[in-house]
Length: 260
Image 1 (tube, rainbow, N blue to C red):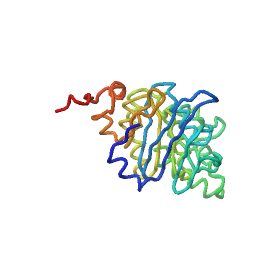
Image 2 (cartoon, one colour):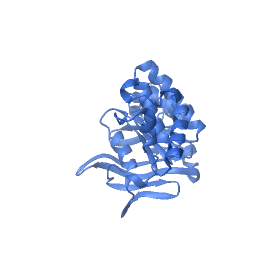
Image 3 (cartoon, one colour):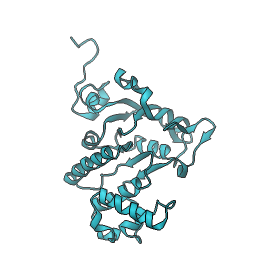
Image 4 (cartoon, one colour):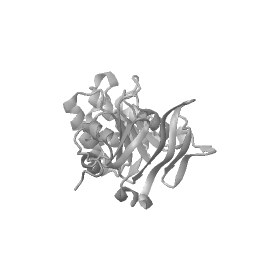
C-alpha cells in the first residue's frame, strides 16, 4: 500500500491504528498487510466492491472475527497483537449494522437504553433520550421498530451505538438499504453529528458517493490489498494506480514518465 507523505507525517497524532493486519478464514486470506491510521474525531471509510473483505476487516476490528496477524491500537491500548486479543465486549467500540439489528420487542427508547447497563435506570433513560434527540427522534421514543421508517430505524441504531460514548464507532454499509436521495441526506447528517460530538468513526461501503460524503480519509480495497489510504481529496484527484482510478471513477491517473 502507498501512503502519502502528509498522511504519514500525522502518525504521531494517531488515535486509532491498524498495522500489518491480515484477515480471512483458515487458509484463505481476504486482506493482507493492511495499514491505516485515524486521529481523534476523524472519519475513515473503507471503499471496495462486494466480497473484497472490507466487512470482515471491520468485524475483526470490532472483535467479532479473529485476525490472522497484525495489530490494532485504540487510544493508547492494544486491542489485538501477537499473543493478545481483547474480547469484543471490552473494546469500547460501537457498531452500526446494515440491517439495523434493533430488538423488535423494545421501543426506540428502550433499544437505545439497552447498552447503558452500567447506569442507573433514571440516568440511562435520560441519556437515551438525549441521544434520540441528537438523531432527531425525540418524538419517537415510544415507537416500536416496525412503526419506524428505514431511515428512522437506522437513526435509532446510531443513537444506540453512540449512547455508551464509545472510543470508536464502526458502520457496516449503514445506508445501503435506503433510497438514494435519503441515503445522501442521512450520510451528511451523520457526518455532522460525528463532527459535533468529536466521534472517531470507520465505515465500509461499496458506494463512492457515500464515501466522499462521509469520510475525511478513504481506503480503496482491491485485489486483496488496501491499495490507497489517503484524504478524500487526494484519493479523488490523485489515485495511486489505475485500479483505484477506475473504481473511484473521477480521479485522473497519469503513468509515471508521462507527467510534465
